[in-house]
Amino acid sequence: MPIRVRLDRLLLERRMSLTELADRVGVTIANLSILKTGKARAIRFSTLASLCRELECQPGDLVVWEPGPPGEPEDDGPEE
Image 1 (tube, helix red, strand yellow):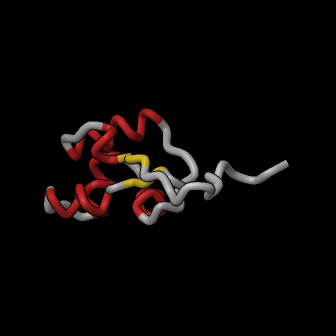
Image 2 (image 1 turned 120 degrees about the horizontal axis):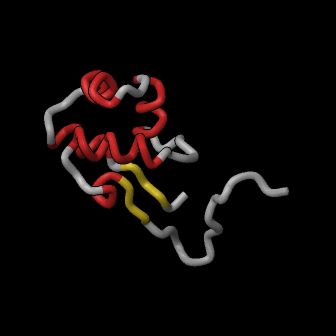
């Protein structure tokens, strides 16, 4: 998927652990881990806003679009 979450980089820059962020945001460590590893399929705007508040960043600092090679299909989920 061409959407990437840069949670690792922001945590490192802010010298914050995943556990500390989870406590501050009110999200489980497991859910933040899924987001951090790029396995998340969606994120609520309220969660995104909480992450941005605690990390003192903009949504574009946390979530970026990185296009793949030309002709590579984007993963939009299961096909029907």
